[in-house]
Amino acid sequence: MDANEIAAGRERWQQRYDKAHKRHADFTTLSGVEVEPLYGPAEGVAYPGFERIGWPGEFPFTRGLYPTGYRGRTWTIRQFAGFGNAVQTNERYKLILGAGGGGLSVAFDMPTLMGRDSDDGRSLGEVGHCGVAIDSAADMDVLFGGIDLQKVTTSMTISGPAVPVFCMYLVAAERQGADLSKLDGTLQTDIFKEYIAQKEWLFDPEPHLRLIGDLMEYCAHNIPKYKPLSVSGYHIREAGATAAQELAYTLADGFGYVELGLSRGLDVNVFAPGLSFFFDAHVDFFEEIAKFRAARRIWARWMRDVYGATSEKAQWLRFHTQTAGVSLTAQQPVNNVVRTAVEALSAILGGTNSLHTNALDETLALPTDESAEIALRTQQVLMEETGVVNVADPLGGSWYVEALTDKIEAEAEAIFQRIKERGTDGTITSGILRGIEDGWFTSEIADSAYIYQRALEDGHKRIVGVNCHTGTIAKDLEIMRVSHEVEREQVKLLQARRTDRDQAAVDAALKKMVDVSRTDANMVPAMLDACRAEATLGEICDALRAEWGVYREPARF
Image (tube, rainbow, N blue to C red; front, side, top):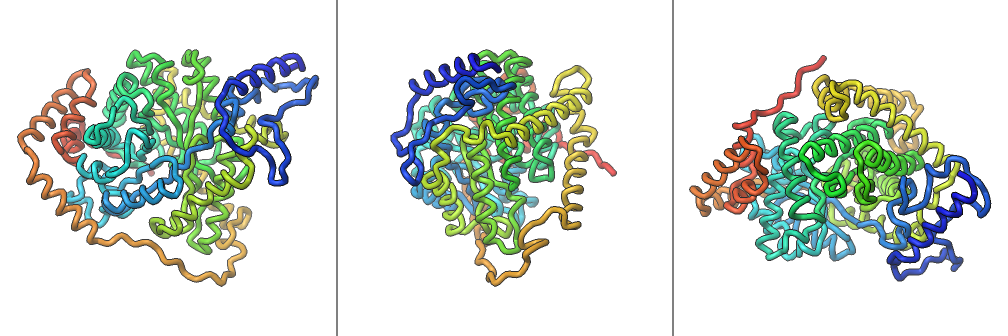
């Protein structure tokens, strides 16, 4: 790009920056030195290939979605939390919000993630242990009691039974008197990554995609601020994928959902802004920054050039980041505070829109109140003390970062081509479904995980406290334990609610929902009615299991 084009781009950026809202804050260094909101090529100097880097707030968004960077708005501190019953988790949410958290992120227990009730025999011993138990809309009422859902953005990490859980959330908001059209938040919903990595599915892919399409339609028409689908690379990376695989598989899944929306006749400029992303921030600092920057650039280009998005918001890749759980070690767990801080900083320098920082004890158990506070304070120290919010994309133009961004992008593009070649009709969706069916994704991730594990065992990759610097004077941590009494009380409460409700109304609502599932009509309104009648999550999912069957992963050797 020649000097005149660069100068014109800088002028466009300046005009956008001048018009944008800026926070009232001190944008100087610790020593009091004024810093510019953005840095770029020197005046009058050409920069070959600069169109791939560009300016914040301008296509291809390599340097961020907004001209102000974090001067306009900092990332949302969204700490992931859930344990025990709804009462206990509600207390943790109020602690997080009271300590400065900017949004809520709900962790559900395993029975809920699998669409099972707490008194289901398969739930025994799991209720409340890896997240909060939610059996019906009444639990949602308690979970968000005293928290204005119209004023707090709420993320829910659940995929298989995401739509009925979302309906329970809407019913809880209704009971608060909220205007549902003003709700804001994110539902994970991403079923592709379940088949690829996490394995928390209910049905075959096609029924899940039908529900996701219904949800996308419903939100586009009724709850425009709410993001019904958070495409998740986090679990793909945690399963052992490389950075490039995480990026490519995640964006490919996103393209699949775009194709789903288009197949429903939805306007890409209307529904695409409702897609968000969820990435892992691992411990290789610069690789992660490059991954985030490449993600925005790839998504913008594909949305414009492949799927015809003309609005900027439809080309934006907005993403949440969580620091890498798989990087935490049970050995010398206090070291995890350092790992988490480095990972969080990479997400920030990569331009994340919201962030969760893991607690130091999460490799051993659910976080204690103290470790959860340390995780929250980690973000606040980075935000308030380090100056990283003062300049948009401060590493833009770094020879290393730009070269690494280009390399990861090229690797991702090569993977997209391999996915398309697996399909039968040239779409990404066809390639994804074939890759799920024949185990290609899981095989590729397993190979990457094996290579990394060998490198650890050979000592070529090093983890402090695990295969180097293993001596320590640290004592064992006090960890949080969820009492089995939680399960007994939740089961007792669920059974009492079943006794008190109008069973005929529940039966009628479930029958209507199944009847709608046999048509082309949107299933969300019927599912909402079932939740209003206090149908349980297990009852809703079991009714659909009876209709659609259960997915069984093919045996592979």
